[in-house]
Length: 72
Image (tube, rainbow, N blue to C red; front, side):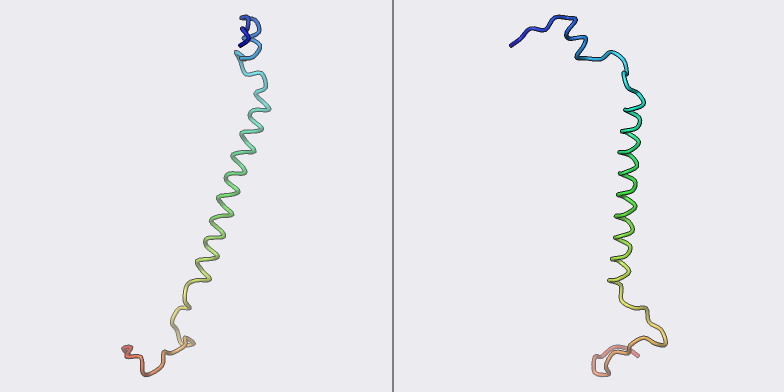
């Protein structure tokens, strides 16, 4: 295993933020993509839920057959 000198080690481990704008840009893109993904998932779930719900009863609702023992 190679032994690093102190000067070489300091080059590998930055002591301060060298590129704060780049880091901020990357974090912003990641947060934006996460939010967009959550919005798309919520919209998809809402669409699936509305497709699976039976139609609400009303004047135009389909009546069940007479022999099914349902209350009238």
